Length: 180
Image 1: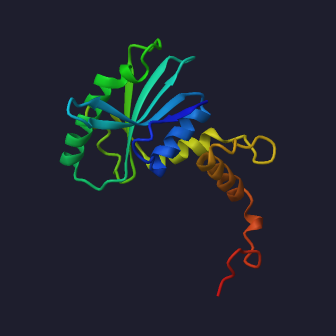
Image 2: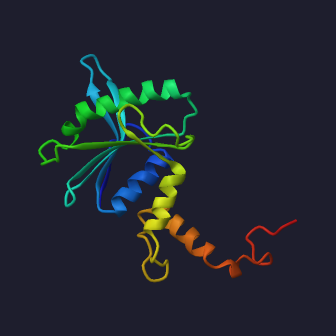
């Protein structure tokens, strides 16, 4: 599908991974979208990833974080981000017919997975996301059904998954950097 970045902010690797996976699964994706233009300049904030799957009528807002904040700070921070998402998501796709329901997800690198809700949303850990992607790539082969090259992170996971199925290629004498 399509990735449309605002150019307002550089997409971090976690946002890139989420946006690639969503596109690979048929979503139209926008990243790093400034929202809430202020009268004297600037914006209230930005939304990391907003996506829509037109066929499945699924509207999704994802916030990604590598932070190590405590639980209270995370709840406060994400409540504000997701409230902005609920307020501005329709403006992002102005003129398009959107589903009524907006699903909101936070993807966190550092999370125990015990507290599954942040600011009225649900949590997916990075480990869970990687498992979802690898599981979603099962049955694909880099040789016969390679992930398109415009999804470099997803393609890398496909290559890694394929390599792990073939431990016979892990010989020490065939390394890029020889062992000392």
